[in-house]
Image (cartoon, rainbow, N blue to C red):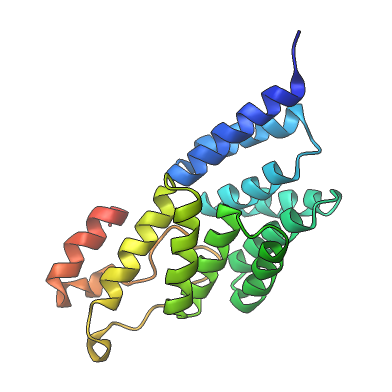
Length: 201
């Protein structure tokens, strides 16, 4: 007998794994299948918000956030809303929503990632490193977080007086991309190769 709920959970788990691995198009497909099997699963919509952002599918992100508001899961709603704020460049609002989601579900890896990435956009490096580290503790296979932490440690290893100022991010820059202008990295040969390996730039 076909168990729609179990199948939905299996596709959600596969989608969440793809999202953590940085396979965003695959994550979107899996999460959409999960939602088609169980349209009342808030975590799938919240994860789809993040996958859509990372894949620069802004219309899908907005539609997913709107659908979340019909579901009775405050943590998932706030997580999705945080991604939407980040996508629009409202980083303080993203932090507020991500924090609210984590007061309800503090051990949610995606919520910690969204918060850490929002801190990073605000140049709050210590907070970003702490929260991203927590996300990686909760999900050791979260390769996107691992890349961010490696990038952040590389950036912080540069003497502060010599660091290139971070560029202002905008809604067209997905969370998983680093905000350094790679054209300036020849100033730091030891960091340039590391960053190019990580982000393929």
